[in-house]
View: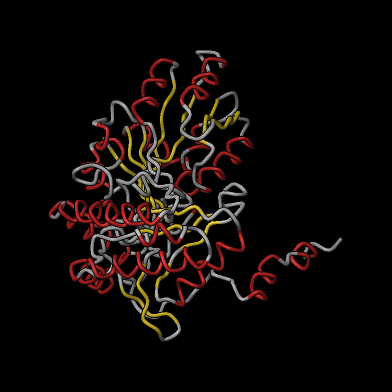
Length: 405
């Protein structure tokens, strides 16, 4: 069989396109903010991870411009060799200080970051225990760790008794890593970090928390899952995250003890062989961190916006999977085609959302994920709520009497 035969046989995207519901790779004309343009039409963005609304902030844009003029568009090298500039070191120090850890390491992408941690630390004879709903980047890193001879076990989502049973069955002396999202990207559920920490201490395990959707969102000052629960570096061994959400940029990072970060810096392939994050990108992340530290009230505004949407959608009769407290509001639809129909209808109504179907979610758990920004105004939220309610009524997701109430 020809290597490309699998490509010819793949017809899922073609079937969705033929039905007129293909929702992916939409081209946004202009900058990302609460208001965008798609196909020449104004649309409210309710599907971005730009939680603090900083992608178009003047301080962020000016920092990127200055870095572009001073350092150029790229370093054209890996961090290990010729690709480290002052901005990289500055951002690593700032992040470590902000999060309360000894050191931090920048990576080219958030997707690469778990691959610079899990298969590098967990090798032959070691055990990785990973939440079943962890992000695809962690799933990929787990597969790489298996290739290194580590054993990877998945525990039921946020199920601490199941995790404890797996820990109890492993020899105490076996090196163990518990890997979890801080905020699970599909639903906005927050990891039960206090219980994870308790189990890690009891069974001699380390914890890696992916705070991609928690940095700048959880905690009074946006320091993430640890701050949300009153935990710190003595409790959560490693925190990783991305700049492509609250920090309005691109790339990934991991923060932790200096001895571990230095090891990753010198051993992890994504750190050694990927081109370093471009100067304007790093400068933008530094500027976004400036704003986060100076304006923590943005976090409160984000939470107020999300709470308003969740309250309204639940009152209308939707099954909202998100508990609140993050930037994510997910609505259960439960069937693939209806999910695509809903996403298309909302876009036609001037609201951009993200449809999630299998294998991104379990079969029967198809959903519409919306996400919000601190910079959404009340009229944005009202328009989004109204559009979702109208489309939900048309598709039979909510009863007419609920909407009337």
